[in-house]
Length: 433
Image 1 (cartoon, rainbow, N blue to C red):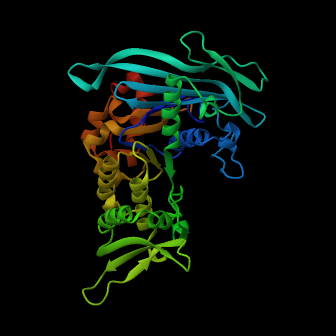
Image 2: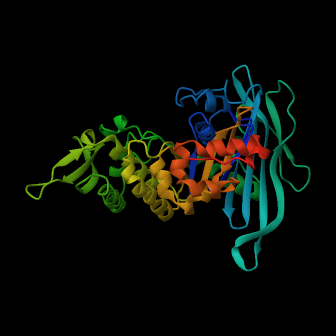
Image 3: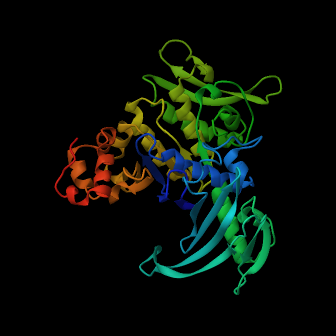
């Protein structure tokens, strides 16, 4: 599973890291860099599925372009960027992957790339706690590229100088190695990293796309347009289990009771499906059945998030921007409980962004270690990522108000600016809500 994202000269970032936990929350003002960080997840996911580097940024006939495309992938005035991840294979083993790309004439090509295996010694008192680094090996690395060369030399681990292999620069070396016969250590690392990157799912539910009939399908689309088709295509026992969970949480959304949320095939050939819910507004008569066309935007988004959690592979990463969009603030605690509980049960890590003070307030002090603040350096304009718990004045700030209040009033960003720019003044001034 992924435990860390690395950004170097990526969009508005010079250098930053995102720690990935069971539930990771990214906050920050508009244009602070939250979406830029999420775009790196999308880029890595695309190349792991075999997309050429240029297509992963610029789009093609199948993939839409990432925001900014090739032109804005690297921090200006740089013409190269690097992204990377750390993947945990087991308690003793991590794989560190880094890809550096160069941009020229609207093309993106490999500049350097490497995959490193790191082994750890376990603490004698706790077999789940790491004590120190036991050793590391570079499973593959690339030689320096010549300007204009269409290929790069990758050196595969062989306990010596590395076996050279010429590969095209239009795709990542990692992609080239998928499915090839490799030394076992290399094979293990490639399999772990590629699987982790392919299992990144960026969910952006669009209610207007979810209201129609959808074909039966095994995988949820990123806009959740085929939510009904995914649920209806499940084996009967699995479908009943998921519909039970959907119903249990959906009952907490409206003022009255939702008796059942379900999907079923429709039409002559039963190849399409529709999403339904039975509502209970009166004790007399049969409960009315409402299909997706009559459901609220907030309800549809909530059901899409829950369905994604329930259908993603274990140890995968679910990324949701503006997770509470369309949901009433009074349901913030319920949304948070759902993300934590269902995510833990399904062993799916969740990374979300939010501006909602109610959701931040619902998190409480126990979530502070898992909240990262995206903010801009007031002089350079660079985006930076700071763990909330690493802020020097956090205890004083929390004494003045809740996280939601501090965030909505811009107090957290002001305090970060003081820490970066005025270390002497910082000792004398206080930040007030």
